[in-house]
Image 1 (cartoon, rainbow, N blue to C red):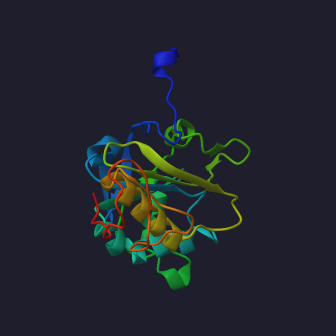
Image 2 (image 1 turned 90 degrees about the vertical axis):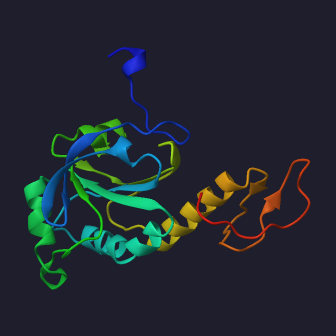
Length: 203
């Protein structure tokens, strides 16, 4: 592979594009990551369907999907399971170890190409690590976290980080300090910094 063909998945870099089969409303659909440019994207990887921690995360993102949609953000979940396994998991109720109907696509990475391109493939298990990326409207990675497999992520922190990204992209002379929440004061810099500004809408 030439240097020009090497894909990178680091903060500040263009996210590697991919095309794969996803389960959407219990139907199989071919999706392409670059088709979501123009929106923010929360792309999260998880190890496997029909496990213990993963359904809590997958269900929690679905339960709060409207909050992300209102921020012009598309959620995509990815694991190395097949689309058939995804469908069976969705068709299984939460009380029976499934996730039920979801409000966002579950992407099948059965070839492990997506996990490999995003550098989150665990070679020892052959599964994706518990990684999360936030992409801006141009497909640039603005945030990345990776948890150990034994503990889940926070939808609340994902929303907080997303709002901070959107705020600083809208207001180029502002920075968001530690634990910043929407509506709180920001740090101003530059010649046009004259005082606090109101909170921003997405964009």
